[in-house]
Each structure stands twice: as C-alpha cells, then as structure tokens.
Length: 430
Image: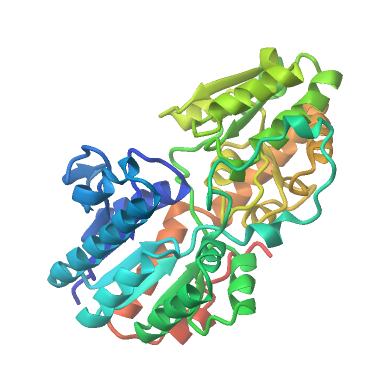
C-alpha cells in the first residue's frame, strides 16, 4: 500500500520562526525520514525564494505578487491583498491536487476557507492543527502587578494576543458561521494540543471529529548535560526562550524578576528570542532597575546550548496551545516554572516535575523562581522528573506516530472512531 503524500499548509514559515513553524518543520522532516512525501506550502513574503529545500523538506511559497508587498498598502487595500493571497493559496492547492493525498493546515484562521474549498472540490481529506487555546479562558484571575501600571506592556497589535478561535470570533458571527459550514461540508478533522483546547471546542458547539495530539520534542537534540550537582553559575541562572510578544508575558516575568532581584541579587535571567516588543521590554527592565541582571540574547540558532546555561527555565505566557519552550527545557532536564495555561498545565505536575503559577501573577511567579533558586537540589529533582515525563509521553517520534496513523486512516478511508477508541488522543500523563 502506497504511503500517503502530505501537504502541510501554514500561513508563515521560516525564516519567521515560532512554535507552529518549528512543529510544521519537525513533522515534515519526520515524515520524509520515514519514506513519506511531505511538502510545506506557505505564503511568500518579501524576496524569499518561491521554492527551496529546508532540512530535506521541499517548501513552496505562493502569493508573493501580493502578500509580499501588502504592508505598503493602507488598511483596506492591505486586507484586500491578504484575501488575494488566500485565493492564491487555494488556487495552488487545487492546481497541485494530483500531488498530495492529505492536507494538514496549521492554525484555524481564514486560511481554512481556501483549504476547505480546494479539498472539497478535489475530494481530498484534510485536517486543521490548532495552535493556541482561548486566551480569555486561560487567563484566570489577574492579580495586581507589583510594579506600577505605567510599567505595563500593552498588546503590540490587533489579534496578536488572541487564540485561533478568538481571531475568527473577532471577525463577526457571519465569518464564524461560514467557517463552521465549510469545515463540516469538507469533513475536516481538528487536531488539538491539549485537553483544554478540546473542551473549548466542545463548548463552542463545533460538531467535528477532534483528535488530541500534543507537540513533541526531539530528545536526541535536547538532552541534559549535567549529571552531578548544579554549579553555582547554573544554580543562580534562569532562562526564558520565547518570541517577545504580548502573549508570552515577558513583561510579567520582568516584574517578577524585580522581586527575585531584591532577595537574590546574584541571580541572572537570560531571555532568548526576538520580537516586536524587544525594545519596550528592554526599557521596562531598565525602569525596574534589573537591566544589569537580565541578558537579551536575541534570536539564537543553538537553543539547547542556551538552555544548558541555566538550572531553571521559565515561561510566563498569557495563553498557549502546547508550548515548545517548556517541552524543550524539560527535555534538557531543567526545572520549569510556567503559567497555568493550556499545555503547560498538562506538561507540568505542580510540585513533582516543576511549578505552576496563575497568568499575570508576577508576585507568585517571583516566589516560585526564588524557591528553586534558593534550593538547587529541589530544582535538580524537578529537572530529572521533567526529563522522564517528556521521554515517556512527549517525544517527537511519539507525536509523529500519531500523525502517521491519522494520515493513513484518512488517506485510505479508515474509521476515525477506532483511533479515538484506541487512545490516540490521550497524552497519558493525566
């Protein structure tokens, strides 16, 4: 039986790098290593090549004639250019219909419209992999910050601090109704990253098959490097790997670090990544008086080396789907402090393999970090348990196996119910 050919469709891709982009590349690379034909299709921005091969994966970029220059246009024309880019994506999917058997679309947004139409007309099965959960429902209570409100960082742009479904809902009920109709009519299968995401879809009444397949981490690349006790330099160092956007809550982290610095002045914070809020966050660190203890490294290609500089990892996200940053830190044997949001709350069992705090709670975050900085042995215990967790439940191979089973079932017309009943949607940690 011939292995199905897969087209992975994503709105943005390398050199734009985020969790969805990394997971798309990981999955495509794993598929090709196992003999599947996997191709990534994405929009073409700027002067990027129309076709290239990244880590052995063919990449096709479309819509450059309008998507790549839309930022030059005023608001209404920019929206029109985006819609034309979506049309170009749908047309290309239809034109390439003989080259794939299953389509996987990353993120539930307007890209679902052309994908649904192309797959419906071509008679091809397809799935949508959702990226993030509802930020309003993930936010929980919002304690008052320990820093003045004047030092708060605001969202950097419209829709930048919303989840997949929230973005669609913000466009109005007609858009949501059309999207739901197209998904049902084209027999889409939704893939979610966490139990919270699955519950949120059920609460919205989307009557579609939903599979739970969490993100995976490359255990051969992200490995612990220390077997003995933590050295002083590592024991007092905390690392945060993320894009510098409002979603990731780095402003909350910096306010928490103000508390940490007051009680542990020798502690150091490394922030790895780049993004639209970098300058504002650097100014915030200066305003809080902690700039001398915070290192902004910018974007780094060797993330494992950055993680291995520290003994503790932190992620203060306001909402997530399944954070790769936490997975990768746990795989490196680091004790993690994260907010209780989608994904993190399943990865981390509080007090066993890490610590959880509420979103926006800078004081709680600061106290959690201090508890590990002041007790390196406890941090090491959590770090060891974290590595065991990802080995058992969150390896990249395990995740890819689940996608293989789903692709094979869809391509050959097998029953989806059997996959659900066999537990493909269970992480096994809870």
